[in-house]
Image 1: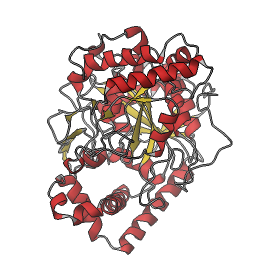
Image 2: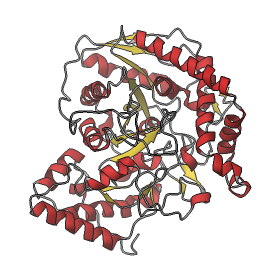
Image 3: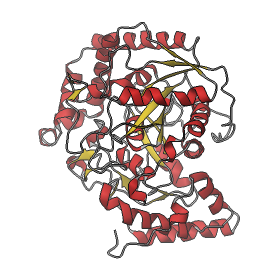
Image 4: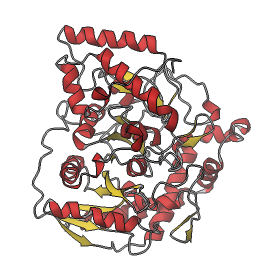
Length: 486
């Protein structure tokens, strides 16, 4: 960052992403002005939260902004992200930028290529100003690592930002970015969205390319998606991210570019919501969390939905065991070379070692048995969606916790037996490959944010955006601002 901070232009950074894009396209704002305004906001607020790391040199970015302005002057637009400052999550590679994955093993490593979504964002006119911070290897729902340190909550800097897309969520909440990319394997878009009072969409498997990577068929758990302050903004970024890529054979084809922002208005009168709550007491929750989430259900009634309390008929502990086996299998396979190198293995955090050693100890039949459980769970939800339009439950089981903790070791008086058991609420959507939208649910008695996740049927991403938009207009929770914004 420069020694003399750039003053923030609040009139620009407060614009919605949709309004900002429109202003750039009609040349009411220049790309250079926009870049300077967001730098001002970053200079003002990032020191307090550490959301954006590895900043890029500013002179080359100014030259890129000037080139983007020249293109607009010639009647050429790259799309809705033309001139948008962005900070790709520090998990996937971004060409010419440091990609550490939060690990000292990769500290200082500069990538030579882009992940598909970064490739699309860059081609669409985004200006990559920094990386957004993430926990080491994206493991855990709390954004801290030995390379860049801890990212702090947008509403209370003594608290966690969530993870693994914690830097992205805080940057959006504090108007340091108009929108942001994230990824989600075990709530990595949903938990930080809930912790920072913004929206995060875990997309359907295949909706947004996530990769490329060494393995492109088994990798179905981690997906990429957008984060934003409202649903039209979320849809704007999704319109750039989504779509088929031949390098990733499970991605979906569509006829031409799809504008996800079209058709968001929809009448939800008579639609039915299944409220799963704490899964009949199976999920421990922090005191006050369920009450806050239940109160937020009133917004669904306000838009004409009926809400029923439902408990799926399934062995939820069996689902958990199948999940951690499939997760460990995936993590161990993706990081085998690191574990096999004794010097690199010595630099891995305990949670990463735990995952890798569990995964390496599993047999092929263990994995097949877990996959069968996954398939049975999907069938239970498929039948549930024959009776209900959407399924809703808390996006997190706790409010943002103390930033100095590694993870919550007890929730609601129950000890957590793994580093991620406190996040069990997000497993259902991941295991079924379903889209899930994290929406703000208001603030608890402690003044901290909470969130709901709305889960839709297979490939119902557009329907999720539609109900999310109606919910946002009815609830108004996302319009509560961080005290840091003044």
